[in-house]
Image (tube, rainbow, N blue to C red; front, side, top):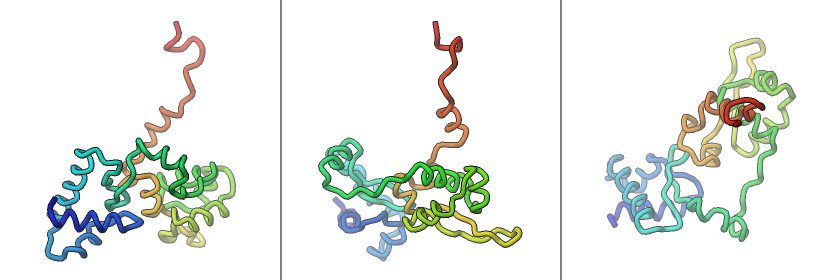
Length: 185
């Protein structure tokens, strides 16, 4: 394995969060971004080729060594790793509205959900999943909310563009065909 790949592997192993290309570049100032990407790809191929229980994943605009999905349940059941607290249904709904509509004001979220979200927003901010990203131009200049890199990390995606499109979700969430519809014979 190339020495640069070994250095990056050590950094990934030590880091608790994904490392961006800028952070990786500080490890090896003489290396170009292309060389760093090549070293990351070498690591990714190494883990895949040799059947390791971990993989190098690109998440939240960075890279991180993660447990392969095939082993995640066994590790969770053995209580080897402390899992983050689960999100409540109101928190998930609010997070979805923010992820798909950001930047979005509290009033807009409440209008979509039909309930107050002040405490849910505060909880999501405390967990580092959403943050204030600006102020609207309207009356009172309300705060605008957006998601953070911590949400991308939690979801295991690089960018919000990797989330399902809204039209895909509406099809997936549609109730089964009613009696007499297609599929019955």
